[in-house]
Image (cartoon, rainbow, N blue to C red; front, side, top):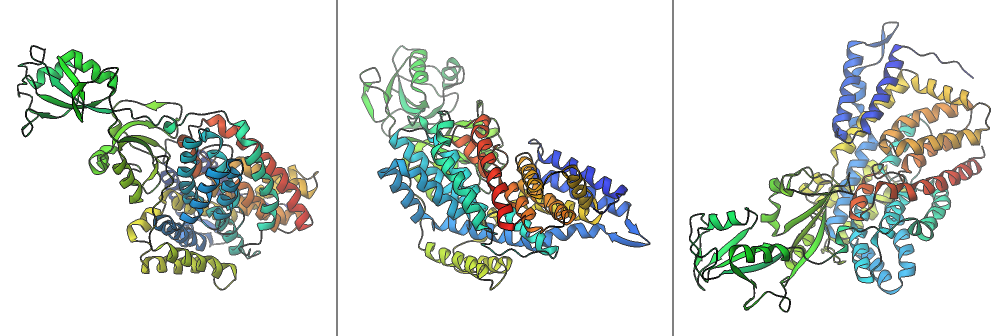
Length: 612
């Protein structure tokens, strides 16, 4: 075994890598900010302290900018935008119909159909739109069939991660690992080259998610479990001789401690009064208000008025004539990256005014057990947060049809346009051109993006919203760290150290140990960071052992994709966390056994396929 020395630059890069991995786990620090800080430190450090040998610069600061032009990153960005076109045109509606019918007719097999469909589709496109597609279907099915949605939503999300492992374009992680392997002059993986090990091991994982996982998950109560409207509209008619008779509006509101919200004041059939604090109320004036039934009855007694339904001015609200919802419905709005609510407050987005919906409650993705109270309009929303809203069926339908937000309202209706077939045809071209070796995936994806724009399947606004700045920045920073680790020889040193520790073990067990290490790392830090940093080390381990690097590269690819055990390991896990009413422990209950199953499976299959 060759001895490899280390120098000050290598030690500094290793320490910076440790700092980077720590920063990537900090929820309070935006991922893009951490990535930019790491990139700046690398560039500044190698500028102030050049990495030279015999007067020759071995690794310059400018080399770390190469990640912005990396072929894998170009392909990832293009595929994000192409996938957005499939989402906005409703091209996935046929899949939704199949899954929805399965839940309506054969619920026993419906979960298996959903898992398989999600996994297969995720092999060819980013799994975020797949999860966005299937979540409303599962919520609607659970409301109709009265089963807990928490039993099926998490298995569905994890199945899409398994499916994404199977092709080079299934996830950004796959593209990065394959791209780095190619850049280093090693084996060029074809699109379906590692479908077989994923089909074998992933098939067992899917069976676990179908038969076992639902039994491990306790019943959780997501916001949509109660579909009864929370806020009712009513009219308070001022009584003669009551408290409000002859009082100014400001005095009446003060009597209610400022909590009563008056939408309008009607004196006669054709006369409405301005809501000025100085306006004097008279007997017969009608105050149109919105609140819970309990609060409205409280205001009725407090201000000396009679409460009626909006459409009924003859029968006061009592036990025999309850408040009516008047067409009001509840829905969940899940905040996704690129939506008008992402990283904005409801006030800044003018949510209520723009969509005619009233926000009732907010469930934070990072703290699903706590429901936020207070002024919801001022809270900055993040990806995965779930906003419970109430409004007319038409307002909710209009929001859903706009295609700008993920709306869970208990129905399976999805936007569908006449451009759906064009979008599918373009996606088929992108996949087939790369699969047949006609052109690299980066080229076919770029051409596909141009075709989506030219045919009207995608506009520039949607294309820009599909790009994730955090994903781009962490890829660039991770590529820079990977280059620094390799350029300074630290990757080879870490590989040698790993092999030295495990030298008494046979090669298959060393491969298994490395796979386990990657699967643990990806649940703590970003999967892309784990993949980019792990790939050069895996290649170094294979070289130290004098064996084929391909199974070790695939160990990185598979391990970095096993983001099953924490809600923060993968972006779709965050969406599922709060929308399904899950707790952190639920991911551990299902994710840890699934990770062990996949780890053991790949530890057996990879050595057998590559004759280690």
